[in-house]
Length: 313
Image (tube, rainbow, N blue to C red):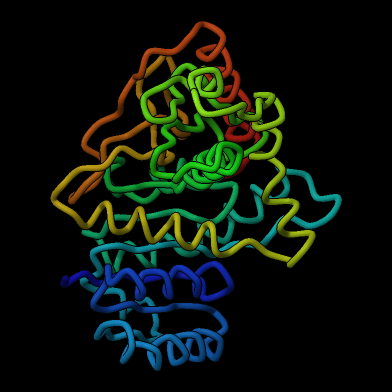
């Protein structure tokens, strides 16, 4: 392990990512950068003092210059959506924040892999690809990885099986137009909708696909209403992505990335399965979709393109 990870934004999400990276021993050095320098210092100090019981790691606060030599840069900076604020208004606000960050961080860490976490993540990933000068295969948005985790967890809860035995993805936007391609979803290689009838030791519950997808979309809002933020799910998700792009063995993940003709979609960032590993995105996977699923994916792309047209990068 000799990875240096810089995290821009030391709020609830950024600090949780730093802690998750420390727990899974992905990074030997973690730099926290925040406009609130005391916050970055305090979070780094707090995590660092736990390392004697985890693994040796150098965790500290810093400035953009301290990002030099980073293998991975994670960007969480941005404001949360306020009550009554439109999605477009949030997009423009956070685009403006990222606009101020890009020249500073890419100057300090021109060879890093970049992970966008702030929302709307697909729009900010597109902005970074188009304006940073960093090759598209080295820029990731966490995309629907968290949505996928919520999907896997929900199905696992329903059937009381290990999450690792559930397979499937959420495609499209990390937002209202996301969807589950159910034709790709399975439990132990059995299609999800066939699992209950395949079970021979008793009656299992059934579920409504629309209810599952609504649960995925509404989970963030439910958590925010209860505790004012979401941080553990996205923290674990981002740490998992950082680990995947640090390994020599490739992983298949639904990161947000620039499409260039896949499924007939171009010039937008959204999530379909991507093969990622050391060095970045190795390629995308155009899994076979039903016509209805393909229509949902194209609808999601169109929703994002409408925002892209209205935002000033």
